[in-house]
Amino acid sequence: MTKLSVRTDRPLVVVTGGAGFIGSHIVDLLLSRDFRVHVLDNLSGGREANLAHHARDDRLVLDQRDIRDIEPGDALFADAQYVLHMAGIGDIVPSIERPADYMSVNVQGTVAVLEAARAAGVEKVVYAASSSCYGLASVPTREDHPINPMYPYALSKYQGEQAVFHWGQVYRLPVNSIRIFNAYGVRSRTSGAYGAVFGVFLRQKLAGAPFTVVGDGSQTRDFLYGSDVASAFLMAAETPLVGRQWNVGAGKPQSVNRLVELLGGEVVHIPKRPGEPDCTWADSSRIRQDLGWAPKVSFEEGVAKVLAEIDYWREAPLWTPDTIAVATKTWFDSLGESGGQV
Image (cartoon, rainbow, N blue to C red; front, side):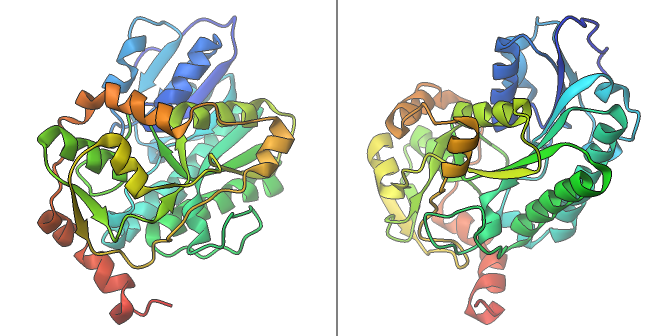
């Protein structure tokens, strides 16, 4: 393990998954606020390069262990003021084929983090929950919307959130949770799994390949830029409020066709996946009222930022209609009509 930082003049924050997409934006924000930061990330989804611009900063420590290996009394958590728990398996489509892995990392891994935080006596744990817990939701979606996970990733993230609030109730651990809608931005995922639209489209643009638009492209997503997500997490840590869950989204759903228009390129259409909503749209009024949070980066500004850093996605897999069909076959078999979709 990397030697722990020795500066004690500023508060310490542990960021699990801090080398990942949103986690690295949180690290940026924390260091700009002169916090010390301990990042716990096994780099299965995150990248050390996401923190390279802080390589000479002695306030930052990167520990490359799995969250499931953390135990109460772990030195990484000693004297931590906050724990921002971002770590987990984030690829949605493979969860159909590997449900046990998702439950192990996203649920049991969360329990391990909670126990380490409890033993360290931290002031606040903030959990990165997922809006996928709502399933095919009515919109705009409020926090009290019925829960209906449609696939194992959604279930594992929701059960992780349940564990967080259970630790808050039983052990009086101060906790909050943020249900993230469609986060995007620089340093977003480039893993080998078929997944989020930005990573897929940006690699296709680099290759001069057509964008693989699901359905007719009219479906909308509540896209929120990574730095706006990060600010919500720090606010959720610093507030005296505890036991709260908040939706975080821009509140201005954008169509996939609008994204194609901003990126510029040819299109090929592929079948719509069952179990996925036509629209995601966060009702974020609660966090706006409770914390005064509001997004600052417009969709057009965010896409421009991503395009300015497009070379980041050069090593990402290049998806085609044929390879996507192979990658999503189990998804269609499980969630399509033959799989008992309701």
